[in-house]
Length: 253
Image (cartoon, rainbow, N blue to C red):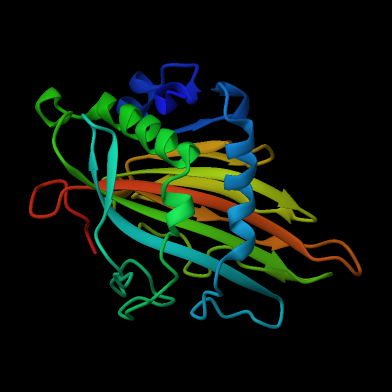
């Protein structure tokens, strides 16, 4: 199967991204051609991640996480792993756990070679190209992938983003929703640096997505609540970011 066309965004958001620096799109704005079994297998990969021991709130829930860095070649569509790395943020960008070397599970070989992930990365970079100079369209970029699942205990409320309204420092990010169950709240919000709300929405369907120029914006997810009395709840996303170390498109930590 040619994975190049597996996932497709059926609307042009380039003008909105250039103007507002953030765009929300619905899962229904995407189409999937073929590979449904791969899609199911990719979705199941959230169920086998290690615990994020830096998250806190253990009395109310647990965050599970994978994180890895890759080189991405837009011409050949290849992702090359750059080996295990700690995830680091400054205290300025993350008052909750900034200044700490955080080690998470790496993106697994199975996830890395999933045609769903490969086509998702290609799709995200094609969106990013809408705001990039043409001479950078075929250059090698670093790609950062975060795969996150948050589980909430029955009757409990917890912070999805305990660091508050923040910036992660990437030139570009795509945050893709991948399912929720027994969760209320958790509205995603994007702000200008002066705190003005640009857009908001609550992810409901797989592939509901926010594309944004992260370094130039702030973002937050409101508190989530599990309304049940005896069943766990969960919410999961995957975030894909791009940067070019040593250039004006480097990550701001």
